[in-house]
Amino acid sequence: MAQSVITPVSVVQHAHYKFVIFDAPNDANLHVYLQEILKEKVCHVVRVCDSTYETDSLQERGIEVHDWPFPDGDPPPDSIIVRWLTLVKNTFDADKKAAASAGRSIGIHCVAGLGRAPVLVA
Image (tube, rainbow, N blue to C red; front, side):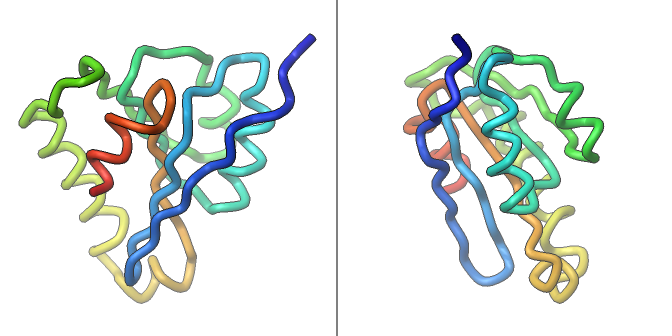
């Protein structure tokens, strides 16, 4: 039986920046996560852990998926920090008013949503 209950997502918002942190979906429960992702107007999903699901349903809805895994318990490598900051800048800072009024956000997850993902958002 497919799991339909998920750990609630965490929304972190400051000024015109909005991030949605969650644990790793799988193919059986991705549809439930997708409801939350769409509700929060996520336009990018960053996976900082190994892939646990197919991305087709996200991409079909215009959500770009970025695979930037790094080991749990390690700090993010400089290359991932640079990519993350570039994504944040391009998503929110190009047009602050448009970003804020659109309410768009960046989704990010690791396995549990407690380590790697929040470190990048912080």
